[in-house]
Each structure stands twice: as structure tokens, then as C-alpha cells.
Amino acid sequence: MVTAVSHAFSDEHELLRQTVRQFVQAKVEPQAMAHDESATFNAGLLAELGKLQLIGVTIPDADGGAGMDATASVIVHEELAYADPGFTLGYLAHALLFVNNFYWAATAAQRKRYLPRTLTGELIGAMGMTEPAVGTDVLGLQTTARRDGDAYVLDGRKTFITNGCEAGVFLVYAKLADRITTFVVERGCPGFATGPKIPKMGMRASTMSELIFDGCRVPAENLLGSEGGGITNMMRNLEIERLGLSAMSLGMARRCLDTMVQYAMDRRSFGKPLAEHGQIQRYIAESFAKVEAMRALIYSVAATTGPTQRNRLGTDAAKLFSATAAKEVADAAMQVLGGYGYCTEFRIEQFLRDTKLIEIGGGTLEAHQKNITRDLSARR
Image 1: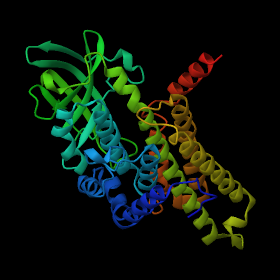
Image 2 (image 1 turned 180 degrees about the vertical axis):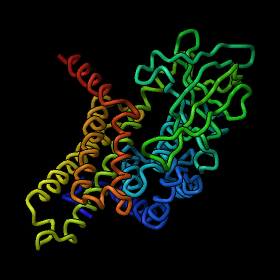
Image 3 (image 1 turned 120 degrees about the vertical axis):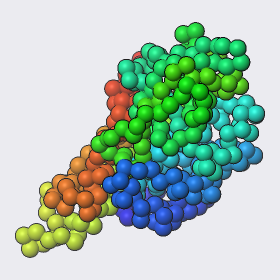
Image 4 (image 1 turned 90 degrees about the vertical axis):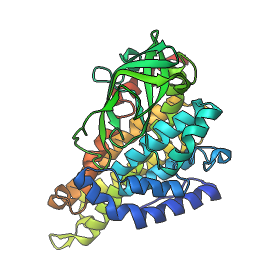
């Protein structure tokens, strides 16, 4: 495994990395290729992460979580994505988009109702924000909610929802009197349905589907936070989501770098190992530099991000850089491996497919560029 000087981690963080890495080698790696090929999410594997308290890594220990920080979340996502990016995306949708998002907005009663089963992975969660006509422009979302007695009635559609096929509970954003508001919607709510699994290019070991609200009645006690408080919930969670996606990019890039280095040492061409050819050395050296730059930026930002410590500029920068860098590293690995990279044996073709998602999901590259420019301009 190729590494340079490591970031200064606490003993607790180092122990966490060792624990996750062992779990990945024993449990995640052996099943990864099969679930990519079958385009299925391994819900049983998610439950095993729950037993290790890795679903609630950012949840206080008093409420059943591990009581750790954003750095810990980055470690988990990096290590999981090294072996199985698709499964990691499903884990992120559950652990961050639902569990973390839900926890910091929920009342004590709501936590008591939903947290125990979601922390174990018995109940899978998802988050509904993107719509057929609205993606990055979240303020333009068209799903509506209105109060009707002891319930809210939701109408609209969400799409590209990770875990949509398996989830039993959903955190949903809708407009109530033109103000974005958050609701917890259970699969059995009247008027709620999910569409069929949506086929996709990469991240195939996670599923996605549409969410359909047709006069969906949600109990009033399932309002999450306050009426009109959805933007606060959304913005608080976007930062750790973007760190998680950045960490996935780092894990995928590390895997591709390790694979190309080993292949370049083993494969011979024109009487010598590939690693002795200058063209190949360029791919390897530049990929290593990108991995180390990603690592430094992501962990630096994670150290200054938390539920009460905002760092939108840093998380935008981390994801903007790491998403593209990971795709470039995967492409370099494809070039080094040639035909073997294009075929499935070394899984490089899978990682190249999977890295592309990070340039789109959780905020497009263009959204990050806009946010960074606006934040820097505001400092003048």
C-alpha cells in the first residue's frame, strides 16, 4: 500500500482505521465485485457495520453512537471506498444523509423512535432532495407540503435517491407555504411509493429510485425541526456529506494507485518492468502526488468541520479537487494497465466508472466553483 508521511491522527483515530481496514479486508473486499455485477446493495453488510458502531460514528455515545468527529467519518468512508465504492455510497446515504442529518435536527422523542433501529442498520434510511426537474438548484424544488389537521400532506417526486429501493424511512425536503421544510416519511405512509431501481453507469453496489408522493399523509409529529427550517438542516449536513464523498474519492484513488504500482512492477515490456519506462513513471508519480494532496486537504478540512463548526469553503474545495483528481488517477491506472485495466479482472474499469459520480452527486463541480467564488468574493 502506497503512503507518504501520514496526517497526525489521535490514537482513537488510528484504532478506528485499523478496525475498519481489518473489516474491509475480511468482509467488504470479498463481496464487492459480485454486488457491482448484480447491481445490488448488501444490507446485511450494513448491519455488520452497525454492530461495530460505525453507522453512528458522528452520533454522541450517550445516544448510542461512537461519539467521534468528522475526521472519524472521513476515515471510515476512505477505507470502505478502497474496496467497494458502491456499498460505501449506500452507507453514506444511510449514515450521513439520514442518520447524521436526522439526529442534529430531531427531538428527543423522534430520536427515541428512529435512532436505535437506524444505528444498527435494521432500518435503512435515505434522503430525498433531488427532483426530476431540480438538482443543484435546491431552492427551486417543487415537492409541496400542506397542513391538514394532525398531518402534513406531501405531493411531488424525488429522483436519483440512493437507498430508495431498500430504505424504510426517508428524510424528505418539501415546500410548506413556499418555505423548505423537512419531514420524516416512513415507507408505509399512505400516498407514498418508490419507483423501480434506476440503472446507472457506476456505483452499482448501491441502488437508487424515485420517491413518489401522491397526497402522502405524514403525521404532524414527523416534522423534523421547525416549519421552514429545512435550509438549516440541509446546509448543516451538506458539509459532512461533501467530506464523506471527498473521502470516498481518496479511497478510490488510493486503490487505483496501489494497483498501478503493483502492476507496473510485475509486468515486463521491452525486456524490463513497466515501472522502468519514463511514460509509466509519469502516470505513477503524478497520481501519487494527487493522492497525497487529496489526503492533506481532506483531513485538514475535516479537523475544522462539525455540527457547530461550519466550513463550507473548505468542504467545497475538498470535494471540488478530490472528485476530479480521483477520476484522473483512475484514468491513469487504466492507461498503465492497458487491456487489463479495461477488463474487469483488476476492477480499474469499475473504479473509473465510480469516480465520475463524485463530480455530480452531493453538488456538481460547477456548484462548488460558484460557492467558492462567492465566498471568496464576500471576504473582500
